[in-house]
Length: 285
Image 1 (spheres, rainbow, N blue to C red):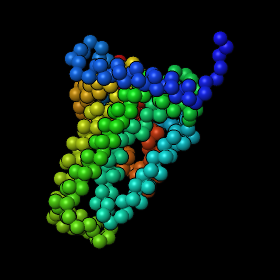
Image 2 (cartoon, rainbow, N blue to C red):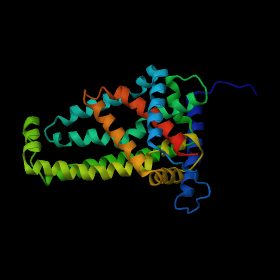
Image 3 (cartoon, one colour):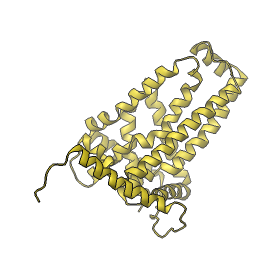
Image 4 (cartoon, rainbow, N blue to C red):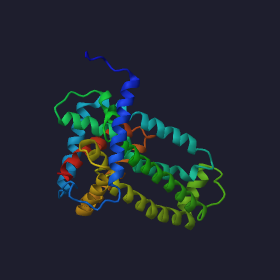
């Protein structure tokens, strides 16, 4: 039978079929204690982090227009969140929203992992290649893990709101300037900063543990979601100092990128996304 170009409906059906099969396989492994198929975890050094950032920067330069096109929607989304947060009732959540960007960063960078994977294979890349994740057998598992990180972000925002209510609240601030003055010149404001930072660190650590290599692993190898998450946690446990340093680097660069109205994320996000792929390559055999 002659081959024909598939229409969008048939393409979607095939993709959903592959996704269904992989999700079924992932679900079947939940709760399993079998570790025979767990990927081998490698030892990392700080030199590896520098090498990953350099490799990520080179990937960014080679596919610069493509990567910027892909991640442009995220700064725009961030600007919309800022506009939403300018409502006085939501001003206390402004900083948690920016900080929470790091929790869902791995989801935003999935397309960048795919570009780096194709470049590593010696293929010419196009920005459309980022959407190859939709055809990946692991797309269902990626969706589930992404949903978990989004839920983690929402829980963090609720906790941050509760911290505000019990320190500076419950009344909303009268203006942004008044809120900033309360935060930095009162004991209750510093209590909110310290307690919020400590709790936020726990949320960030949880997100880092489950996602530091899980998304690239799902794209690269046919493993179930539990295996990907367990492997990611094992990478952190095997290299705690290096991975925590990586987390601080990511957080610092995201803050720097967020300062100029989030526009710096147009550069920061692709570099970190590509670098994460190379970190995965060094962390998992």
